[in-house]
Length: 184
Image 1 (tube, rainbow, N blue to C red):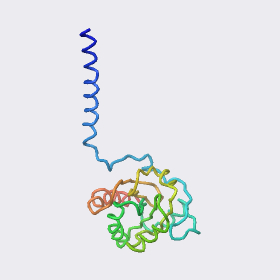
Image 2 (cartoon, helix red, strand yellow):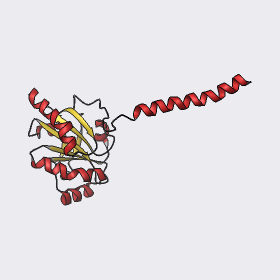
Image 3 (spheres, one colour):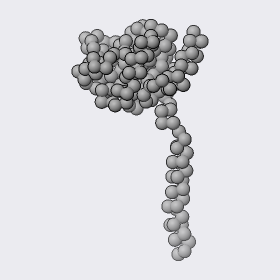
Image 4 (tube, rainbow, N blue to C red):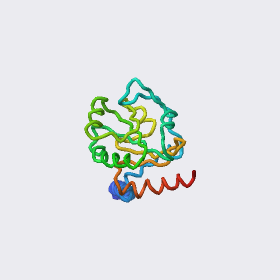
């Protein structure tokens, strides 16, 4: 009887220790470093309307042709996303520096998106309407904001989850942009 009692007491304790180990192992992980199988892969095929020109449909090939530099950003955003509002001014600053930014308005309403861009400025060269979230699914988006770094061939070279700011830009994007430029 005491052997059964010992086993009954030991099993939950062992489970608890294993759970603690798993949780402790995850504490050091950076939540913005979510791996993407699309890194070093071309943009997935898509067709979507533009937010400001619903009569115009764009696909991944046409998007790449709009790119003006060696690199471009593909920024996933939404009006319901408070973090997107926080990063928006930084994106406007990147645009003024000549960085090409394409927007993907994710699971949002076109009218709200147009009001937002009118009020806060429009950093996007093109803004894709992804109100159904299909492009986001194809990109493996977890939520907004997320930003993908594209090379001149439309290959995704990096993915950042969360808001862009000067620190993230300098530490995560600038070195990768320099690497892309050195390869061309």
